[in-house]
Image (tube, rainbow, N blue to C red):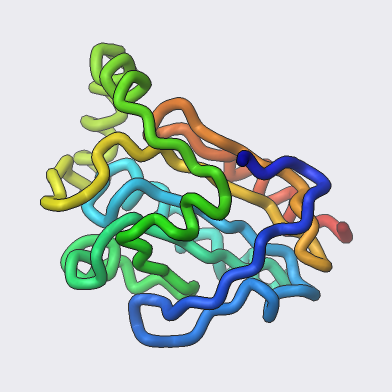
Amino acid sequence: MKIQSGMTAPNFEVEDMFGKQVSLQSYTERKVLLAFFRNSACAMCNLRVHQLIQQYAEWSQKGFEIIAVFESPLENMAPYVGQREAPFPIISDPHAKLYELYGVETSAEKIQKMLTNPETGQMIIHAAEQGFPLIKEEGSNFNRLPAEFLIGPQLRIQQAFYSDVVYEHLPLETIAQFAASSV
């Protein structure tokens, strides 16, 4: 089931990649970006995490938090996304329990279609130029698509975004506006 605006965000309690307990319930009074990524070696995912890290200091001053989820085993996290030194929780979800809870899609058909699109090649080159080369992570779900959720106080979903391609996310401007809002 896909999550929609106006719904209450499903709660979860897990450990992040550093062993810290993360409970969505503890964010009840804050605004949150809950971002689901493909896998920890995904070039476009790491580029996006880099962009979020760059904005985090400004956004967190406004009471905004970020939680990132990757469908990767914990041991795969450190060499890839773990190198980013994110100031927010990064969760390893190799069995896709959170992905299922939030209805995040897997689609071999959409991935294959995307791979034949010239824009995909340009995005891969752009990510590599930014220091995020395309690397195949063994044991990962190559067909996972990203999703992002803007969650307001009382864990109310303000915006649900399910991507059809691996490099599509909510615009940073949309997130910045939400972070600055009084929702």
